[in-house]
Image (cartoon, rainbow, N blue to C red):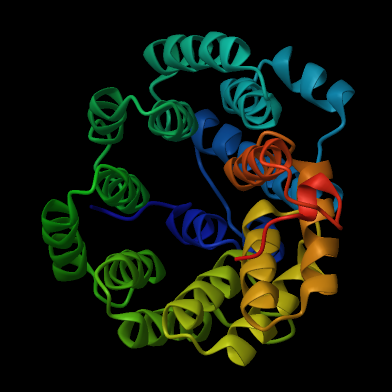
Length: 309
């Protein structure tokens, strides 16, 4: 897993430090057309992911412009953003096939990563693993580890994490791999420490070191430890940076319900329902509310806020 000119930029992007990634790209000199295109793609990706976290959506005209770009990285990014934003299973499948075609045509980091991620989201784990194994980059191995965890193959994920750590134990993505395995493996304290290590490794003087992804990871492990106050604190910090992010809202709902802060939980449920009406939590709550209604149980709150956790 050799590093290249953009390895540090990619690491910052994949652990959610978008502002820091933009800054690092700005001072990173690259050689060759492909590297320049990837750098441009990464700058776009950082900005679009920030827009999704803060506004819940991306300007369709911008996605359309990227779709027509001569930069192959931007074309793959445009399709992936559409895949993330659509609620239609048929549209998702169509966009997934487009991502596969772009991967076969381009074979670059974006096209491979996005095709593998889309395959995993659709439950097509065999294709997802095959795609992620095409490039021996650190971020691809961490993606492979995540796919293995989705498959409930913690044994293989642990082995992958060991191999990643053996290559470069101090890399932020290696720490992320360890944190993921520890979280799913029932070692939340170790996971929390690894997430803190990532923040320390990525610190840059003069730039805020804030990643909603890592804050949500911390909230999740504190929920696992049933340390509700600390979990809520981490989730609220993430909410300040990413008020439309689904993972952030789910963590806030979980914390508030368990802390009996039902009015606050209802607020976050309403927000999640508006941002992602097809989110599994929203769908499940509606199903349960309908079941209670059919049974004649009185409901005092709105359908999307009727179920406590």
